[in-house]
Image (cartoon, rainbow, N blue to C red):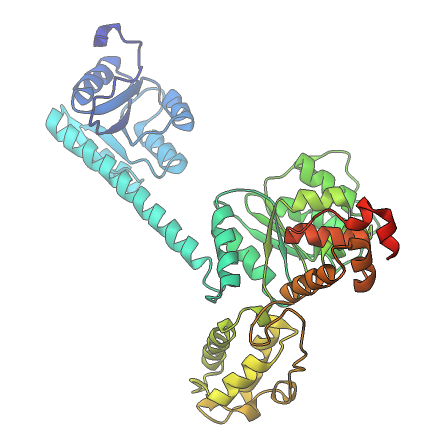
Length: 483
């Protein structure tokens, strides 16, 4: 299409090997056409407008690699336009056109954030070189931001230490869901580091620039919890002397972490479910709903499937929060990660306490590895903090450890189907034992459930999880149920 037939201000075709996307703003249409033709032939995809206001609107809708503008325009002064672009799109470099005698204005624009200036009448090759540098400047800036994000993502795992298969699985799941807003349920025993996983999910997500807001659902009664989550209006209750924004709105653009959600009062659960489904909340005492934009991450140290079966947790809410589940392993299932964590805590507390402590003796490592750690990572952290505070040596010794760690003796119980030399989780012990009992009973699930002290639904759920949900002989042949 010849230039004369092209619609006013429409983009020029982008030749192969194009240099970048250029927006030209000048109230002189002939100058815009001249720049568009000259730069279009030199590899730029050019769009132009004679209205600065229209140009600002276009920047909201389209992406450009650089903008060139005249400083003297009737509708809006070029300095004001430059200031608006820098404020609206600081990532897009602005080049200003100015007459030879008004260099002071060009310098003022640069102080305001413009990338460069070109004097009129301009040399086409000088203009092309300036614009090409501006495009390259933006490309480099984008690359720096990408690398910064990559470093941030890598550091998102910096406090999740360990190389065991169990912890590598956790890190892999964090990485796989980092760029989505999918709901994540984090499960694990108390002290395993569920909130660290939630922080890592936030830091590696596209919402990392937003707030991370956390609340412990077990820490407050239902009425107060509702006000904390959804906010309230003035006069909603006796002490509501002023309106208050809830945590859903305080987490706008970021992440809301609902810790110990299994402890949430049953009366609050339908309200939370509606908020998650509709993406709106209603402050206490208000007749109006407000939309929120926050990712929801939950955590629980309870088995929520059992809580659902016992009717202490709503099934529909469970499925809403359990889109992706991350199981944080107990410390006893992480093998030699324990030594790595202990060394990390030792260095941390030695630095904080300004003590010259550099490590621990082999007998200390043996005691640490031999203890069961019912309090998991949190208990280990407290143990090492105490030991560093009490030690008189550069290396921790056994006497620096708490009495219960020093005196601990393994029960050394022989569990059928479990090699006593293996470091495996309680869940794995349970799985092997259930399957062994089931095999001994010829696959009779009814009898197996009675022996194990479980109801049939719980046993079936566990077998489905193990991939062992086979047909029950007692169901096929009822007479066998009594044998």
